[in-house]
Image (cartoon, rainbow, N blue to C red; front, side, top):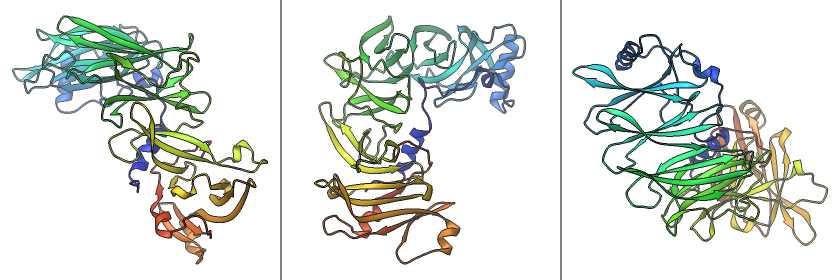
Amino acid sequence: MIKKSLAFLISIILCFSVSGCNFASTNVDDMLNAPKPSGDLDLIQISLEKYVGESVDLRYPRSGEYRSAFVLNDLDGNGTEEAFAFYSTKNDDNTTLMHINMINYIDGEWTSSSDIKIQASGVDCIKFDDLDGDGVKEIAVGWNKYSTLDHELTVFSLNSGKLIQRMQENYSAFSLCDINNDNITEIITVYLDTVEESSIAKAFALDTSGVENRGSCMLDGTVSSYNEPIISTLSTGQVAVYIDATKGKAGMITELLYWENGGIYTPFYDATRNENITTQRTSTTGCTDFNSNGIIDIPFMQSLPAVASTSDSEKAYMTYWQEFDGNEFSNVAVTVMNYVDGYYLEIPADWVDNFTILRKPDAKQRVFYRWNGKTLSTCEEILRIQVLTISNWESSKTDDYFEVARDQTYVYTMKLGDSSTLTLDKQDITDGFHLLAVSKGENVN
């Protein structure tokens, strides 16, 4: 059975759709003064202001692991962290000019040693890794340019105690990973041109002499934005990068990148259509490691059978969670997802293609019926899921319903029907019911 804790991952993915590794925000937010830092950070800010000669406007990354305007990391592995400050000054045009300043701890005090001006309006995200194999980390900074959807990646290395710029590349999403298993971390960028409806993924590698472009591949050019890339593997264990992308009004695809035949490769792109229709779905459900085996699973939607009079808004869906091995997909789980009420149900194998659901969202109720494929009609009721407030449940308990879960507000109950042809084991059905930690409204469930 799928672990209940995995529901948290699914629900979090649904909460955000981002471009690159950036959460949408305004430039005004970026300029708000945060509280003064304490401890070493306070001393670092004093050192920065001493170097600049005036007060500074600190700039905060919008996404990623690091969210402070002061980021500490031991780049050279000498046991002492360097500090990196992101800021602008009152003399800068803060919509187009920023600084990155490196501050070292030398002889008991913080001292600024390097300052670089960047044409940018904000910081998108920050990553550290050894990108050229010399044992010293690089710092990769994603910058917001003219809007929060327009990004530029800059990679810096240490050279004689100072920062030097190694490469610069426009991007909509980027990640750092050893995609070709050569023990060197590559830089993977994806750039979407919404005007030209063109998207391209590129792989770069650094060495001590420069930057090597290790190839590219086209992606679906009809998407509108990307979520944060997820570094995982194919089901074979090969390193792969999964990227969910928003497509259409309420749809999504999952792009997949891995190394094949000496270059970066995507298996789902149809060049004749300039699209990836393989993973396209009418839902904003993102890919996730659904069964917690370390491999990302991609959701596929299938509408449940319904009588001819059923409107699109009344239709219900099954979700197939599938992993990919480089050639074909294999099922991990089949579920019915209810993002409105915050739960999902794993479907027994013999139910697939043999049931349908009547949605009653106003009553927080889902009614499952056996489906007759010959007559295209519903048969006997096999399961009813009812969500009630705690007070309503306590005051209206009946022998027909039994509790399967509860949170701080609601009790989730079931009533089993009867069927001579479908599995209706109470324990199995109960074990297949899981709460989503964060409920999000969806058009499909």
